[in-house]
Image (cartoon, rainbow, N blue to C red; front, side, top):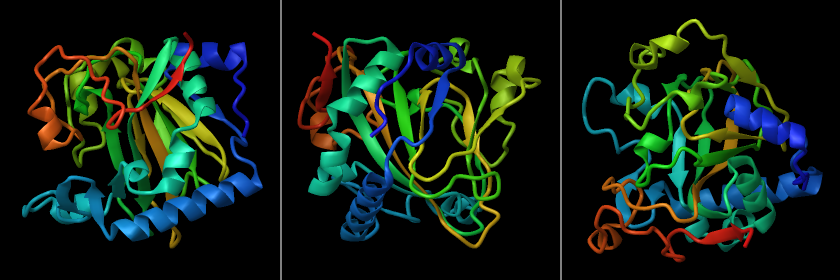
Length: 272
């Protein structure tokens, strides 16, 4: 695993809100990730997230937009909680250390992992932010995005708006069908040139949860598979948004409580 970050990469991330790490996984590691994620998805049988009775394709309700959003990507969350093989990949101190160094924090907890699968001919993923969906509000939160297939301009690679993480807020603009909708909230970035994150399989990117990002449509007959994990700085507190937290756990929380439940959000790296 290519897990050593240079000072230049850290500075680039902090300035731009994202960084691409080429050849993050070697050939054997990539095959392990592919096999582990594929088997974990099969075992879940379409269940989107543990503890919530939501199946892929049935979580948007019955409305005119359902067909569109169900063809953006398949999304399975917290595979680490239901697969020992994926847990081994996610609870890896080396990756936690990378996240901690990029974010500039002393400790990193898993917020949630998610497999993101763009099927053949899938719709684009509109420009959006991540952190406003989550149960904590920290400008340093970030995610890793590992390409399990080549991510190309044709099959749905990510795009980032460089530097946007410095000026966006925790206002949740959602993810709509209109690709440019977010620029109604952040018009200052409407004329900013985006950066395409074209990656070979086995490469990865990290991006800040407040960096504006989206993805192309899949204009090919093949899949574009990615495995991702979102990270919460240790010491984060509950903001009142349940998000992926189990209902029973949410009942024990009040706004301002420390999110330090190791069964739900394990601490995978600490500098102390």
